Image 1 (tube, one colour):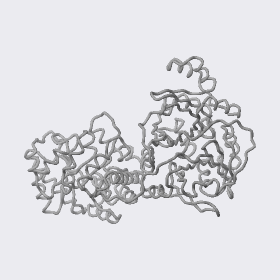
Image 2 (tube, rainbow, N blue to C red):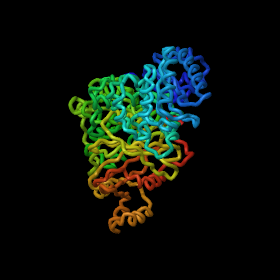
Image 3 (cartoon, one colour):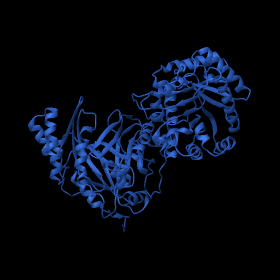
Length: 638
């Protein structure tokens, strides 16, 4: 499968962009004219640079306001075209994009436009070049790919073809099935972009809010299936106009871009196996049973405090690693692992982030296949040396540079607790708290990372995304996106912080990076769990009494029931499917906390309660400006 991306999709100068695109594994690149014009190198030097990086120039673009111009403007457009042809030949590319005219001076008429393109085709043919015509969604006369195709058809020239751009078709809700009848040899290149559904001016929407296929809300897969039905097997190219992307890491955006194209091709091939689109073979998305474990790293003298918090939540020591300082705490199907090793990745993670949840393990249908798919989609494989008797667990680097492990039940990975660990008996008297499984895992990240990790999860494992939600923090807004499987046994919430004053933003700043900020445990009886936790010495997060006064009136709750919620510091929400109960711990360290939830048919995550929970959690944070002590597993640094 041949992949390409337009230089306008990334930030940096032209060399930075080209190097990032090549590192990501793209086969080709579209040179956006302005990127070339502001770069101090000749067309020949730019072409050589691209080829030295192992790529080819798939397209030079854009050539604007060409067809349907009255004289003397018409003659001038052909003169401009000849100059573009000169540049292309020096650069070493044979295809130029002509987008539909937006000039108020342009004249309508399909035959007039077709005649202009026929003449342009003659001139291009004399130089061994080709011209691709694209219908801009805001074109003055042509804003529909069906009309653009009719012009190309009437031009009737082998050097004139069509450029199809998913955004221009999908933003206008044009029937994609009209693409299926276009001869594949007349489709010169496919440009792809997604976007969130926003009701705004088409030009502004296109210029600022495009994103990678799979990151937005447009039916890009349907568009690509229609393209594949023509037999098209050429380049799939990205043209992404996005302010956030241009201000971000060119390397990260390029990696996301290639992943999005490979994932899109894989989806098409699975739904249309007869497609001629050459797609790298890979296993299907991994089916996930749930989160098998979450692993914490801590200094040996800090671990007792964390373990005491686990004990108050009803977790018991269940196993100890045969050769390492690693202990497993268990309750129901929940495994919390505490690693105090002074070597290896856990120790390195502690040195950077302090006590933190740095790794998680997913129970999947086939761990080896999950790893193969992840690597095929550009994920970074994680490996480290093993001690005798240890199992090599397939893993990749995830959010914040942490680790995502894959386990399954059909290999020895399903017996890792028995193989690598010795069972131990915990004699600490505890009340069973009734926690059964991890309801959801919440990862906090910078807002600009949110789409990266959304694409990471949706392309690797069998999950769907939910609509983005704004979480109100007293100090700002946090954008929240969830990926979850159909069974509800895996839920990952991703919270994107835009400033460091929010609780989420402070967590990133104080722990030096993105990561797991909280875990939510599921119970079937929140009130019985709350009573058991209190007996264990658990101190719940105190919620303002004003919240409960409002809650009673807002939902029309029975006064006795509302008082019961208040006595237990239990938050409440309701949707069309049922009820939701939430109980929180105060923050641990620099913002880590735990949640207990009960779902009675409810499908959300209590977004309406976030502002009350956040305000209460903030009271437990270290005051701003107070220095912290960072320990390096055996000694302290200040």
